[in-house]
Image (cartoon, rainbow, N blue to C red; front, side, top):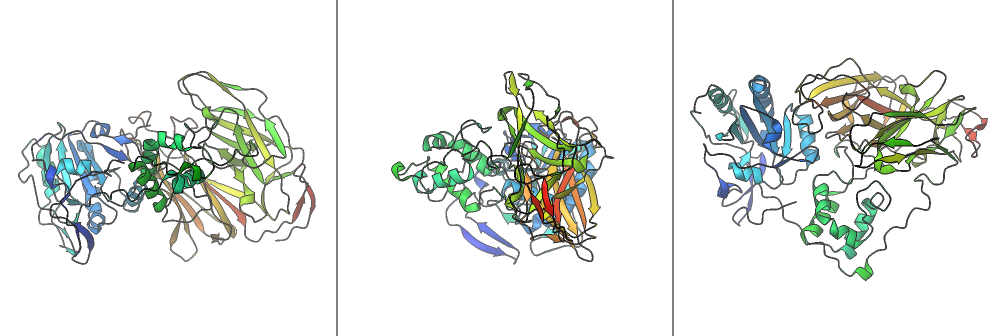
Length: 604
């Protein structure tokens, strides 16, 4: 991440403003040296969206006015001002006015920015200005300061939203609606009568500089091997290896970018809601260490004392050597370029008897062409939401119920086969791929059957150009459950999904929040057994938002109303909930050679 070397004068002093904000105050605010005048053309602005992509105002499409509100997750005036901004957005969105929240919090992350937008029900765009380059260009000194840029790229207004909210309190109502008046005058082709107003709020702080650098040998190697090398190794779907110092230092700037944006390691759950046993994210300390190492140029240290890279796995399978491997009979061909419709195949094996499986792994022999793959069992009754088993996504984990340590296994009914739904992606050349599925059978007594249900509403339609269309679905539990995990599937317009549980007679609790869903990384989120026991009668609700706007970089057609459909150009809402019955104790003895029941003494 680029960090300004000199933004403000020295002599920083921490003060407490009216008992509300902990501010950093300088002799000059960070943006004063770049304060542009009203009426000037705005220079090129660059910021980062919730997907970690670099964007500019041109990505908002055509507009008559662009309203940028500068925010942070810690300034209380931001929180108190957001309802008014939402009102103005709803009032003026159809008149060609685009609203965007620009996060400038020195300690904020993209994910925290996205979480705040969800918590405050922000319906418009949210972007991050991590290095304050946008704020400096526009002369912004505080949050929630606002600026208005006209369709020709000229700064027309800078200042407060209105005069209602003040540090430490608020008037019953505003005496002057500064932002609204500026918009009205601009849309009517008139000069803005009061183009600049004083603004209260939290002063901006310069981004923190890098801390002391740790060398590759003294700590960075261990961190990279622990968090990255599982995927970043030869013959994997990762774009480059990270098994040596030379590998890492050659890619250090890319490492810094994806670590800063929290796109790597892939993990999309908000840290404020729930703890998950498969959490692959970096801690704040680990993130700072990597960024400091990159900022220092990637110092090697004494390479003779660096840890050895992790050895290649003993097995090609992440679940260990399977007890059964089922392969596609033939290979699928993938073209050089273009959109590849989903492929469907039934694997050539029929389970003649009921079979219990502890672990499944979907293994493409050419992983670079598989975007994701879902698997279900297919019986004489067909296939449906209740027959889903697991999925594959690069960087995700195979389904290994042994990780839970509670005797759980998956039941495949007699007479079933395994079916795959495969989404291939092109690489620029013709490719072929065969997929194998490995199964590991239980070695200890099966005590609980893994179960799931799917929240899958169908009767919805996302309007054209809608940036935050909400869809909900809920189910009430008919038994006491031990929640083990959740999984989300949407297509390229999916923005976020939150799972909420409302226990009988109790307030709602958030089980999982994915504030910046990424279609490229459809991960499962696993809980340790016993950490989330939910009684019968609990309602589990999933709430999602879809971005069908021009600002969505992956949107096939923002002018189209979009409904449910299997292809990527359509949309889906899938909220999977995985669990076991709290009181079930099957005590099934399983033949480890074939997964079939040898004896049983079931109790409930």
